[in-house]
Image 1 (tube, rainbow over the protein chains, first blue to last red):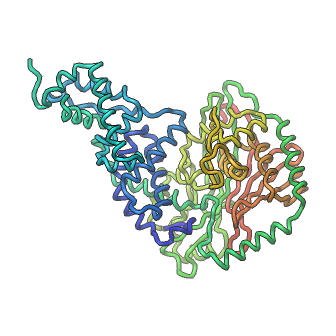
Image 2: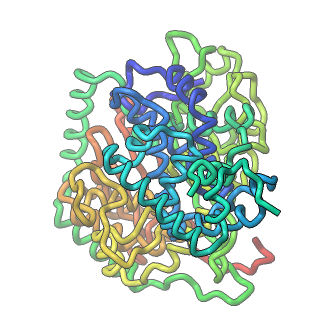
Image 3: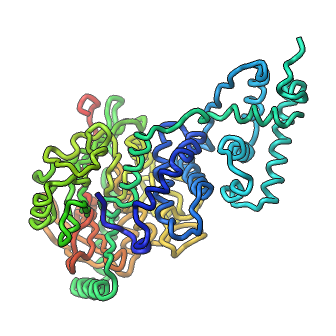
Length: 183
Length: 384
């Protein structure tokens, strides 16, 4: 089943090609969006992202996951704007407590992360949750590698500062994480 | 500080680290995406794939049509200004008691063009006219619900555009007709295998998923978003001049929400890139989208008249049609090389009666999307 094409510029790209692209990247994109918006609008944002990707598919040299993330970022901001919100506070995952991850550390990192600015949080999400390389993150954020490295360094410094302010994690984390705390 | 430990903790915070979207969920999402990227109504933009001689003849036809419809532009201005004045003086939304809601029932009509591998080579595309009843109820707190009720497949209203389309569909074994509102509960959304569907198409739909109609962004918006947009519309100023200024300054978005500051136009046609505010043609495109929202015909009618009056290509089609209850004027303005926008208004009250978009299809101006607006009334919640 297909509908009549509304665009004359995509005659050489079939929906089947795009469907392959979709299946290649749908799962990571859904997770990317789920980290940033409430569950009820995840599908909506993902669908809008792919709809825009389709429009621009033949205009970019290398349609890639970071390119999709960049489109999704705008769609997420659009959703925030529609809902008149600054940004979502998606509940962080419950950290599985072990000897290596004691409760105090879990609480401290959660609290420190929440104190970061939205842009710092986003940078750390891209780095540690979305598992992008730094050159890919530069694509998503539309900045140079040099700028990105500076921003990552500063975001981590601010995170450490909040940790020191709010917790005993710094004492613990100075040690190798596989070393259990002394009794 | 031990960076490895910090990084490990950060990774452990990932709220989506263990969630893997199911293949069924991905398939359902792909269905939504295909509706978005190839919408049934063509999102009012049916582009013919054949350009050149066909487009040239189409353009010539538009020129011929608009020339033939010549009343002067001053006649347009007079009709629209009078309507804006009458509409601005008319009663606004009725006052609500605590147990009441605003109610509006609109009829949305759109032309859907689709194909199927089962269709023969000499008739690969079918055209279907889908008619949907849109009813909204919004209470004083801005909450409520929306119902989109598509009419039955080949029912009184929805039908194939031509007998030829219907015959081709029947000869092909009645493949799936994807041209109506649907959601995950009525089985049509998942029916992508072109099996025979002869029953009611759509059925009651509590959300707008799958609706690719006039201004609804291919079903992107949820029912709750429509309801909240209705509350946004109700919150707009009553002064049409103030609304016009807000539109011109980009301060009303596609869901009717107001911004306190001037912004770039939410609907851009490329003529105003990077600048604050909307051009008149962008304002018209934005109003087209807004008018599908609950209550928008009441709040935005006069603003629409002001915008169309500013467009030098606007023409009066008819200034004195009579219906049972009103004398109606119809004004038309080209919005693309092969498309025109039409509005019909009540001469006495200034109320907006309907809007339509026509496209040149096979050499003829053909309606591809329309909204017939119902009046706003206050109903008790038990009547919802």
